[in-house]
Length: 156
Image 1 (tube, rainbow, N blue to C red):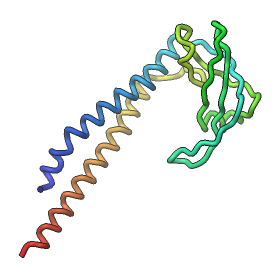
Image 2 (cartoon, helix red, strand yellow):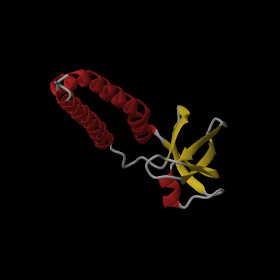
Image 3 (cartoon, rainbow, N blue to C red):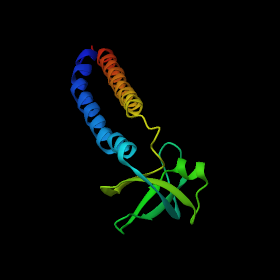
Image 4 (tube, rainbow, N blue to C red):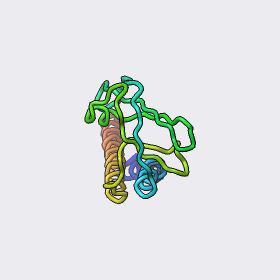
């Protein structure tokens, strides 16, 4: 199988992965942050615990578990990422600014979102996902060349 055929065979799955990744990031990340910027209400939450997590990239770190009571009297809980925990020196009992949606208090994130830029984050996400797919495609091309060379070396 030639390198061009491998690239053609990988093009459609790569495009599907790109579109699915972008849809997931848009729905679960970017649009929620955009809504928090436009409609979010800030509240002080209390850090209840620090939990060790093991992100693949950076290794073990501590994430802060927080809670707050929304205006409807329901208790909401969440986690602040390792970066928030480190930068703010969070510990059990400390206060953390959280932004939530008044119509849906279960949708909340640590921090304030006044300077958040949907377009900037979308472009960064697109660049990261596209780079990953390009690397995957290049790996497939390199593998196809290796297989092609191996097949030629075994010919009588």
